[in-house]
Length: 254
Picture (spheres, rainbow, N blue to C red):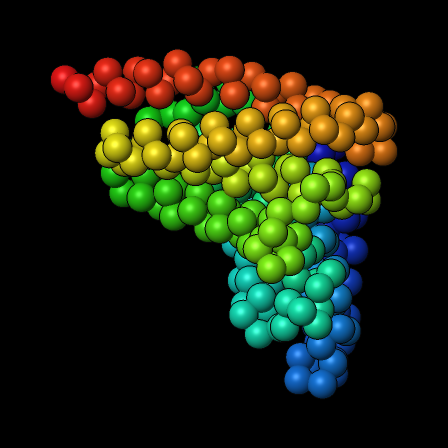
């Protein structure tokens, strides 16, 4: 009962704000008001994200995530990434997170905003799912990985990887590379050859991130970057994957 009362107030505020944002969208059309239109949709998406803090029902939580994807994903097909650079990066990263959270919800029943876990623990608790559900999970994982990849590529002018990313952007950049690798290894029901390939790609990515951290020690030390925990988890995975690759190689020889 107490939880319901607490949830009631933000839900009322959400409905009120959503109503007026809807009216704003009717005026600030994408054709002619790109900046305003995109910002309004981003604000609505963040309202859904905030509401998920109180949401306990997995189906409603998944519906909120899907709603956010339907709002923002089409924008990436119509706005120019060279003109609206910040919007492009923000929405690519947000879409990657949304599909990653949908994957975790469908594959493992993990609600958004749950406790942070070791990457090794995540590998251990991947639940077995039937083929139909597995195909749905794989599609979500691929979409998440693709959006993380698009975000990362936006930092590579002319396809060249920079020696250093500025402090304001390096956390997002490294997290995107980390999660791009992780989502590839979460594909279920794929062949041993495909498992070997995605594991090799992930290992190269983890090793690159660790090398970047060695070359740019502020990643480990600066509180405003706050990547020390993720770097340690990356180190765990880089140490674990060679053993996994050996096991896969042994299976392939049978």
